[in-house]
Amino acid sequence: MFLAIDVGNTQTVLGVYDDKTLRHHWRLQTDSGRTADEYGVLVRNLLAGLGNPGIGGIAVACVVPPMNRVIDALCRTYLGVPPLFVGPGVRTGMPILYDKPQEVGADRIVNAIAAFERTRDTTIVVDFGTATTFDYVSDRGEYVGGVIAPGLGISSDALFERAAKLYRVELAKPKHVVGRNTIQAIQSGLIYGYVSLVDGLVARIQKENKVKARVIATGGFAPLLAPESDSIEEVDEFLTLDGLRLIYERNTQE
Image (tube, rainbow, N blue to C red; front, side):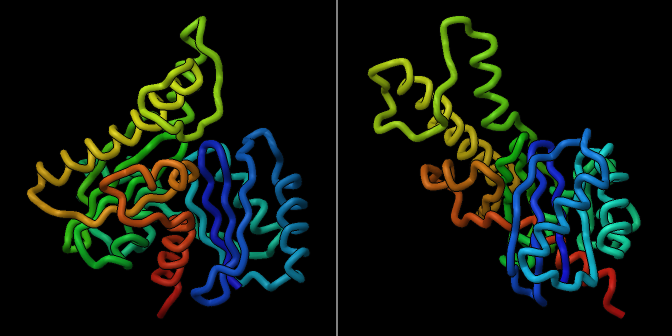
């Protein structure tokens, strides 16, 4: 069995693969204050629920530097497997055209690889996480670059914290764009406003590069926002996990 670990700023997603099939997955809160022992006990208990499958390989994408040491110790001590961290020196099979390739987040590269493996065409990946990222991959399988915007959660938190008379509301799609009360008005601004941001940026990327790209969405807010988007064609909640599987295969196959 193979274990993929995607450590994001807010959540950590783990997935167990049997060959190319994702058998089970979990979402945990990312907490750099937790020790490797705490995470180790938690992960071993989760795996026990699957009958303690033997883990023969692990790949990690981490965008929270303090978590690297914790995850490394967790894998070595509690699972007995040295993990492969996505970063400089790891074979990805994808040319990185960024000015400074080392600045690209591991999750963005992993998403791009998984998406291009699926489309084999010009592709834009929209990842709705703590930040919302847009990653552009050419039809030659090159990571060209992208866009980083504040995530939906960050945007809503900033609104409630900085506007004295506004209050926190459920992040849900309202029935109408024009709200008839404060809750509906805030929901409209957040949901429909954010969808317009996504569609607008996708359109600009395509216009600037004179292409018609495939658009795939992933991340926690994707199921909420993608159905309202005119540009997103497909949602894959586990795109990052699949990319980790691909990178692991490319670095272990003889």
